[in-house]
Amino acid sequence: MKRWLRNGLARLLAGVIIAGMTGAWAIGEVRGQRAAAQRDKDEVARMTQKMTTVCIGRFLVDLPEETRLELAKPRIHGFDISSLDESEADFQVRLAQREARLRATPDRLGGNKNVESVREVKTENGVIGKIFVHSRTVMEGTRMRGLEQERYRFEGVAIEALVHGQGLSFDLSAPDYDPAKIENLSKLVAKLVPNPTNEAPKEPGFCIDRAWFRDPLTADQGEQIIMRAMLPSHPDIDLMLILAAGNKPEEQTLLQRSADVDAKMSASDKARLSNLRAEPRTIGGIVGDELVTRGVEKNDAVVYGFWWEINGTEDNVFIPHLSFTMETGKSDNGPVPSSLSQDAAMALWDKISSSIRLRPTQERKPVEAEPPPTPLGTHALAGDRCPESGWWLCGDGGDGIGVLGGQRQYIKKGDRMPQALLLPPQTMWEKLRGVQPSFESATQTSWKLVDKRNRKRVPSALPLAQATPAAAAGMSGSATGPRIMEEQGVPVGSFAATGVPCPASGWWRCEDPRALDGTRWFARGSLLPSATFALPPGAFGRSAHGAQSIERRGEWRLMRLADSPVQGSRGAEESA
Image (cartoon, rainbow, N blue to C red; front, side, top):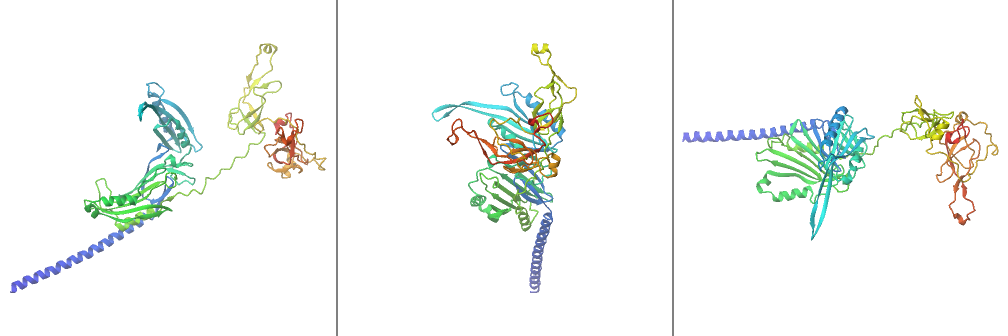
């Protein structure tokens, strides 16, 4: 009896001790989970304290500052695009080597016409390089269309651009492109803007790694890019964002596809996977589907998956197909337990995903101030770039020595100023032989800008309305001359109307382009005339011998101050 009692008490005591230990373990486990969850929340707060904004395509997203990311596989208009750090000298060497290899490659017939064209690139964005069209392929034969046999022929060319700007090189290529559309590449290259620091541009366009393409770009050009990102402090977390414009939307949305998958899962798989969120979610003003799951892998690792997707549109680059995902528990050796608890992982996902938004482009690139116009009287030497389009007076020649092309010549802005070819007087023998001797001066020819018009002034075939002289108008014309007029504050570009006393002596242009007047000289104080217009044949039922012109009130604009219509030994044609 005593032995049984002792044994019974011992068993009871052991049960109490085990129960107490189990309860303490459970309490400790709960406390441990709470402490781990708090540590994870603190960790997420630390990670997201400093964020950096990244431009991806036409969108912005904020990522933890520690993020390592890659913008991969950009593609526009069928051209794959890559970028690399490279000095201009190294680029030029690589460019020359590439051209040599292409030229050394036989064409499809075994000849030496593999390279069909080479075009120099030099854009306003500072991008230089070349575009190559090469390696044409031809596929032809016959095929059956119903009961009829028809011939077919398909041609394609390889086209690539190797370009460089701001210490970066960019390669754009397509191995089999429609020969009729090769101009697409040169147009695309013209829009390329190097962006070494990956700053978000203010102008509308499409961002890739260290560059962007200025709009306009359209949906049918199929712009695409992928962002891959990882967090060094949590290597099991993987983020990916995919953008693709111009694609036909999927028949099913993300949530519809997820529901179909769930319906086909086995009971055991369903026990391992649960949806934490599965509903539409609006981010950045765009509605998409959000799916958040908790999974238990076969090795019992608990992992989380996050997914937000816009199904996209076929014709709007601002609503492309967009897929943003975040997964935990990733490793090269298979799934591992998530380094963040469920609440912490959810907080990190919400922080990053909620920052996705279209890049604002209200601000525009500041308009650069136009350089001041080149004044009349400016000199330029042979070999210099012409600073202003207009009529230039050659400093060589005279005293019987002519100039090939004329003493006054029209030269376009940006063209090289020519070295004058001088034409001395012919001897009697040279006249008999029809020979004109010529020579060039040993010094550079000097040219003087005397007229900014793009053609010579010629008298109108019809009489023009005349200005009323200052004396007849009861005004004094003695105070003419640029110095006095400038003191009176009459700036070039001023306007005056018919019948108004001319504010300053100079060349005035009629603002109605249909008028016959063009640019005319008027004296200060004279009453500005009406504008003259030619009448078409048969106007107003007139006879063939009737008036050929009419006069109407007009507006005149001061183009240049001038004391008189003739200056120096040259006529008005050279002075306006």
